Length: 64
Image 1 (cartoon, rainbow, N blue to C red):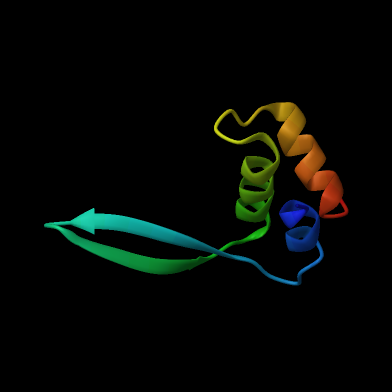
Image 2: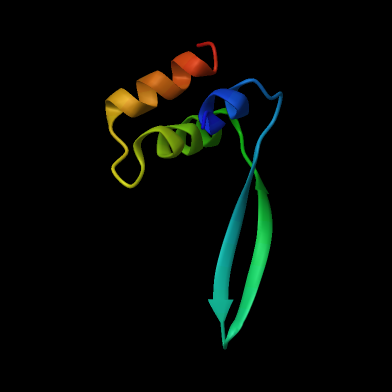
C-alpha cells in the first residue's frame, strides 16, 4: 500500500477525527493546512512514533 504517496499528490487533505461520547461515536472532518498535512503524512509513514525524519520525508513527499 502507498497511501502516503497518494495523499501527498492531492491538492488538499482532510483528517477524520472520531470521538466516543456517552456511548455514541461522533465523527468530524478537519481540513488540514500545510503543517497538518506534514504531520498526517508523517503519521502514515511512521505510525505512532513521529520523528523529525518522518516529518522530513513527509515534507519531501509534499514537494518542499
